[in-house]
Amino acid sequence: MEIYINHPSSFSLAIARLAPHEQIHVEPGAMVSFSDGVTVETGARGGLFGGIKRMLGGESFFQNTYHAPAMGGEVTLAPRLLGAIKVIDIVPNGLFYLHSGAFLGSEIGVQFDTGWGGARGFFGGGGLLLLKVAGQGKLLLSSFGAIEERVLAPGQRYTVDTGHIVGFDGSISFNVRGMGNFKSTLLSGEGLVCELTGPGRVLMQTRSEQAFLDWLIPKLPKSSNS
Image (cartoon, rainbow, N blue to C red; front, side, top):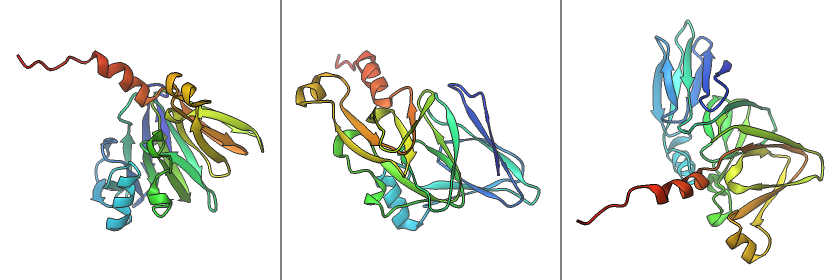
């Protein structure tokens, strides 16, 4: 499978070129277009139990699988929000922790560990739900805003607001905590942060969905009883 990213800015479009009879898993609502002969099958990946686990992790219960015909085909994908798309390679015996909601699509060999904490992070109300990604193949992920990358050396610590995390390598250890003391956490406007310790790669998004909603909702027209 070959994947190209067009318009690599706030309006990114992923073009997946499929070999004959090749398949790609796609998040519902992400498909923009596909070529003649491509067919789609909708189902709960991993069966009923896998679908429930994905739903608990913040992902869609169902997932679409696009099948290329004998001559191959093309499927184009785009995220719901304005942002970037990135393709990363999942390698055997490697792990990647993906922020729930950042999944856009993947090759068939990419697997989501539905047995890991119910496919969700263990951060309560911290707003950070993670999917554990393993297997082998290309993973397409998306962000709200641009994607910024940091590569941490062994033992290097780095702190990221939970609302800005897209994902990070499984070699990184992490801990979610407040911003300083209780007063700082409550009044700083930052909420909870994730402290990550290398080695490994960290992907961040330059915008936060929750911060955008906090700005937008007070500006929406209020309903009137009159």
